[in-house]
Length: 173
Image 1 (cartoon, one colour):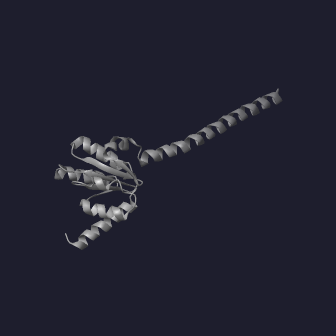
Image 2 (cartoon, rainbow, N blue to C red):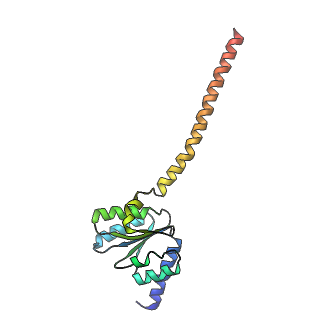
Image 3 (tube, rainbow, N blue to C red):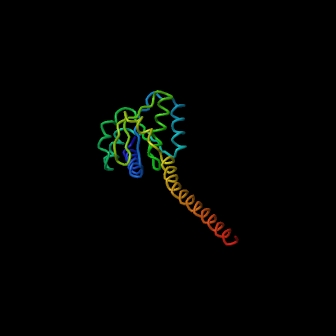
């Protein structure tokens, strides 16, 4: 690989790392071609970019982007990087599921919002709510008070109708 190719890869990783809300560095050794294709397909479905990069090039790219100090020592052996832009937890869920299924994919380190997590924390990361779950929770939280207000107004309206009916009956009597 010539120098300009290496510089292009470093620039690409710098761009992706600066845009990503989360990056997951995984050891993919032992994966068959079919398993690697399946993994890439799962990442693609979740709008996650996956790239295999030489560790030296990844290290050079991360040095240009601040906040990745705890990652350098983990860049040993085959490394695939999953870049997530929307849902920072989705890659953890995919890696965990795939790791349990194949027993071959191992998380080395993850970086979420510039915070570094060791690969041993995959279980905890994969159990966090993802973007869809958080959005549903927010909508539910907003909806609950509104339905409470609507219910209270409805009850007041029924009470008001009952009072008006009672007054009408008294006047008629």
